[in-house]
Amino acid sequence: AATLLVSFGAWAGGAADSIVVHEPYVRLAPPNAPATGAFMVFRNTGDKEVKVVKAESPLAKATELHNHINDGGVMRMRPVQGIDIKPKGEAALKPGGLHIMLIDLKAPMKEGDSVPITLTFDDGSSKTIDAKVVRPTPAPPMEHKQH
Image 1 (cartoon, rainbow, N blue to C red):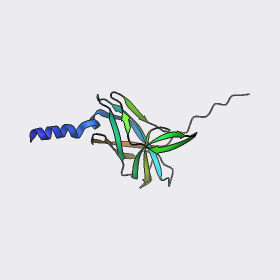
Image 2: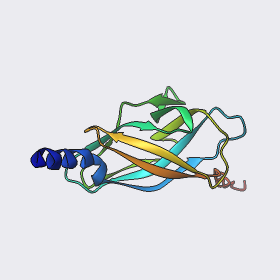
Image 3: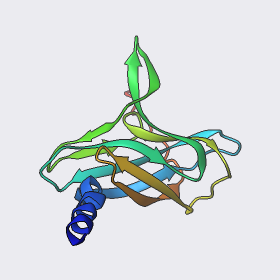
Image 4: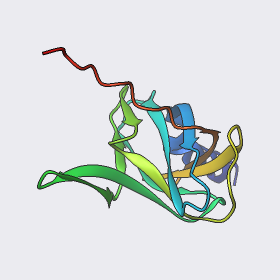
């Protein structure tokens, strides 16, 4: 029985133990907005590739892994089956790229709130992180050249 407990303990930690999540944040949604995005950097400290296969948050009725794609010159969001993190590598979730969508928000958010997000990995292990709600920063002004 001791061997079973030890091997189960090793399995239960699994991929989640090798992933470090840096600077997780959720974009503050405008009032009455139905959805927003979560962004962060996943770092894999392990020697095996890890895949994030699911995300969940009590803030949203649905939570999905997404990517932006260029579809004939139009940027569109599409769900993805997983986010690969190479051994000793990282995967950056950022605006305009991979991200986590929080859909059908259950409650309004305030800047500074903390949103729990549970990440599930391809081996069944999971990890819950807290992402701070931040106000989106405006894009830098475009430089105009004099004619």
